[in-house]
Image (cartoon, rainbow, N blue to C red; front, side, top):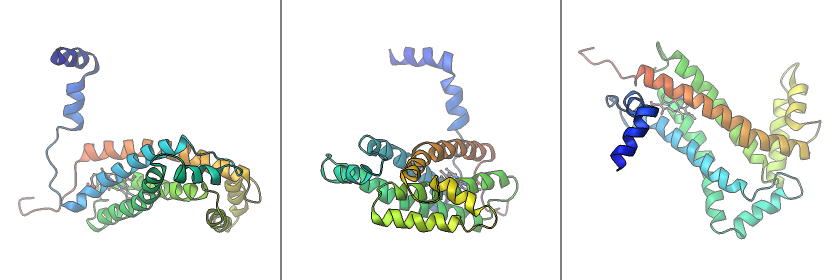
Length: 219
Ligand code: HEM
């Protein structure tokens, strides 16, 4: 019965072709260092899943943000666990993506024909940092409020366009409800959407070029 269902779907959606092109490739010659890209991808998905659960209770307004987090921690079944995973997952993702980038740099895997994979990677790194920066404000406690005050001030010190950047980030000259709304929109929609798109391009390029490896004697 399942075979028939599969054949029906395969004929219409080309599942076997998709499998062959995407997954049925020779196993790359690699070491544990080559698993860091997949680890980054896993952490991105983990952050997405736990983030969606947190969204069920989190409220992005200055009056309720702190209390909603408090409720997640103390009132919601396993809320502390989901928030804990999201919190530590964020730190881990930044560390893992950074070490992945370092590995690519040390093995010189950014050279021809993988320059574009590297450039897309730079975008991924900046977006990952952006996720950390925007997520940090969401609890709306003293620590996050003042850290973001300083962070946006630093961004505001860029020559010529600093004032524009500061106001664009804060939604005005000071941190306010508008800042929280903006950071929330960036954290749950803009940056994840951009990350997902760039990860798609990154993975396409990796499939296209295959994994790099050090040349052997035969090469
Ligand atoms: C969300 C972040 C990222 C994800 C999900 C991701 C995912 C991956 C995956 C799955 C691979 C193949 C396995 C591997 O070599 O580890 C890979 C390879 C690669 N990544 Fe990333 N990556 C990310 C960030 C970056 C960054 C920040 C850079 C550099 C600036 C980068 C540059 C590359 C390059 C050049 C390769 C090809 C390596 C080779 O062929 O040896 N990636 N990435």
